[in-house]
Amino acid sequence: MADEAPRARRTPFPWATATLVALNAAAFVATLAASGGLQPASDVLAAGWKAGDAIAAGQVWRLWSSCFLHAGIWHVALNLWCLWQLGSIVEVLVGPAWLVAVYGLAGITGALLGAQMSPAPGLGASGAVLGVGALGLAVTRLQARQLNPEFCRQFGRSVLTWLLLTLALGLMIPRVDNYAHLGGMLCGLLLALATPLRHAPWWRHLPAALLALVLVGATVWAGDMTWRGTRPAEHMTRREVPGAGVTLEVPEQWLAAPQADGSMLFSLAGVPAVLTVDRFVPPEPVPREYQSLVVQRSLADQQPLEAPVELRTEAGEPVWYLRAQPGVVLDVYFAFRGREVVRVVGQVAGERARFYQPVFRRAALSLRPIQ
Image 1 (cartoon, rainbow, N blue to C red):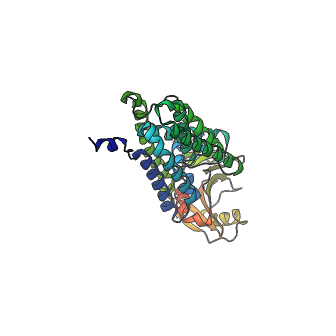
Image 2: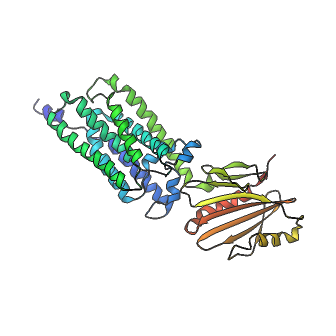
Image 3: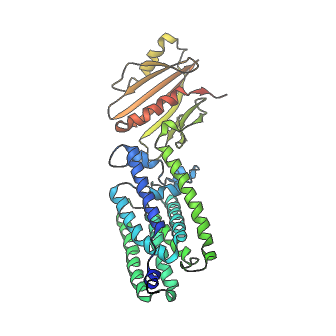
């Protein structure tokens, strides 16, 4: 019996908190691996960060995937340190299922508010972590009679100071998404109204357990969708370009934007590459032997130019290709279709060219007339 008293007071290990920390760390390592450097590349992060236009176009999983992506080592280190410090205490208070539930819901709520209020892309676990802190603060106030009063006072004072300081820093630092912080905090406070303490009957935790299972599944799904975005040449989908009368393959996450001049632009916020498709009609039909001359004249303002290299589509129609560099790499493809010429222009920052030139080439060679 003497051994049972200390054993009963032993604090359980916060497995849910440790798992969330590990998932965030693994996501950061994955972005480094996809970027090929010691800093995550913007286009790799753009595959999963919160972007209002992409979410409005149907990529709602970004509300969740953005809660696991970070812009740099200090960003991820600070968020994970705060998550561990707060999560390990909150998990002891309310249990692992409620911790996962509040992390997921607060992160989604923060990202949704940030997407509605700010057009700028956003990422990071801070909204979810603030939700965890706000829930812990509210629970120690609402259920203080069942807890140690001194613990509630010290914990509440520390967390409240941290929450206010975080919001104040968000107002002073332009790139911080304070709307995501505020949304996460408000979600945590509201969830505290329905959160039981860990020692409550099991059925009181059932809603959180079911929600936690859903959020774990969403994590796997969002992670797969995010990873696809880091390999655009492997995940292409066919899109229609009505103004040019063709369809072609583009990265599945890129959004289409019709332009005033009749061209179609495919891009995604944060990705340093743009694909534009348009068409023009030469004054006279262009015989095959003069096609290269038409290409040279249409690109006369692009310097320096390499000699055109003839490629062929599956239908055997010639496509002429030129590249202008350095700094910004410009890949231009021409498909001669009777009297019309369809032009596919890919533009990418020089340091990311090797990732996106295969995308441009595949898009040009996939041109098909609209049936």
